[in-house]
Amino acid sequence: MRERQMLDAAVQTFGQRGYRAASMDEIAELAGVSKPLVYLYLNSKEDLFTACIRRESAALVAAVRAAVDPGLPPDRQLWEGLAAFFLHTAEHPDAWAVLHRQARTHGEPFAAEAAVMRDEIVAFVTGLIGDAARGTQGGGELAGKDVAGLAQALVGAAESLAGWANDTSGVSARDAAATLMNFAWEGLGNLMKGERWSPSAR
Image (cartoon, rainbow, N blue to C red):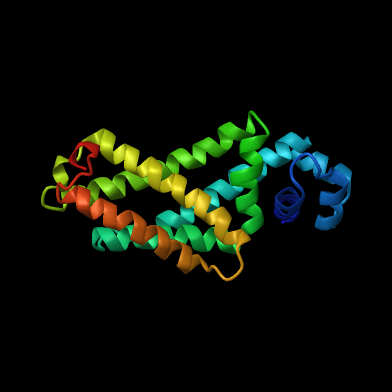
């Protein structure tokens, strides 16, 4: 219970103040515990930040996975995954700031921790796109590198769009998910029908 309180306070402080500006005194005060107790549980500021990254990464990945029903058609699976991603990042903006902005800009080992989360999501999305391709006439011709590249592009777009949506008034999680779904699925649909864009065709 106390450790959860400390992690909650740390995520809020790191997310709003940034890793360097955040202090253990602030975190302890917000958690309602003494600073020595924070150190007793989590050893150092670096260890505390790492624990925040790991907890929030696991929560985000779990939310996306739980939302996708394998029995749904491919487009619905992708939609449910995107909707869950944007809903989670909207409902936990401090956590997303920790994962997307803070962890990646303060070097190792934080960037490596964030990369683990990203790799998990990319692998999951790769599976969704691969399943969709195999279930569509012509889609089975998509090479593995095409599927992997599309997954990387989709996850990268989702990450950027989530940050923008959280910073932009009037943009809901559903709006953000629909924007990316429309952009991605139309392109994926053409690829799966064997229709590829080529500069030589223009």
